[in-house]
Amino acid sequence: MFAGLLGRRYSCRGFLPEPVPQKTIDSFLRIAQLTASWCNSQAWQLYITSGNATRRFSEALMAAATSPEGQSLETDFPRPARYSGRYQERRRETGWQLYEAVGVAHGDREASGRQTLENFRFFGAPHVAVITSDRDLGVYGAVDCGSYVANFMTAAQCFGVDTIAQAAIAMQSDTVRQFFDIPDDRRIVCGISFGYGDPDHPANSFRTRRDDIDEIVTWVSE
Image (cartoon, rainbow, N blue to C red; front, side, top):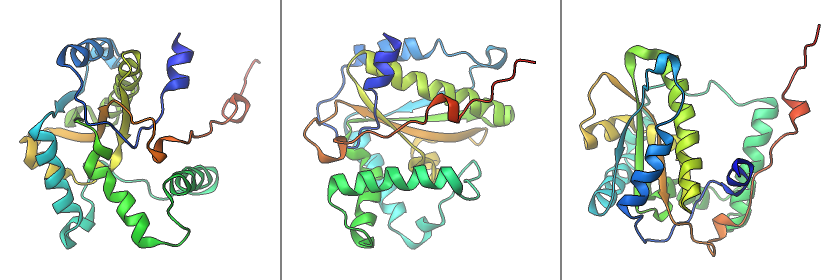
């Protein structure tokens, strides 16, 4: 069952407008709340939008992302220093799969820029969850939040709810913090847009590849 859930889960980039019933959201949140954490600290705190709040949040992010000041990409966590080697290869492969699916030609920066901005429209999702961690818990609190994010998405899949984790939302942390009035002792980890995926949306037509376990495991027996 678990393998089936993970096998069906994908990063949804095209949602139907239908909202998820509150009872369903509560159900998968209770499952995600079973996530293990260091000393059972449960570092995560969430802010979840629906209805008009989702629209207003999108407008705030779009305004920030398209302004000259928004290009500074303020984040609560350091961004990756660089992508190189296998990491850059995987990143490029995923990017070209998406661009091919939605019809963005190689080198078309205007079209790729429009696609990037879909992050701040939440790909049409009716709901967004913003995941935050306690600042004092440092990197280990963030690691625990990463486990929570994975379980949030898998638990949602149990109820037929599709998701996409978005670092792009955390790249506008000042705007996010202001919109939700998030206190300074919380750090913004990421966003998760969620709802019912549109099976006919071209952005949902591809799946990313995973390496074989022999490529990621070093076996030690002596």
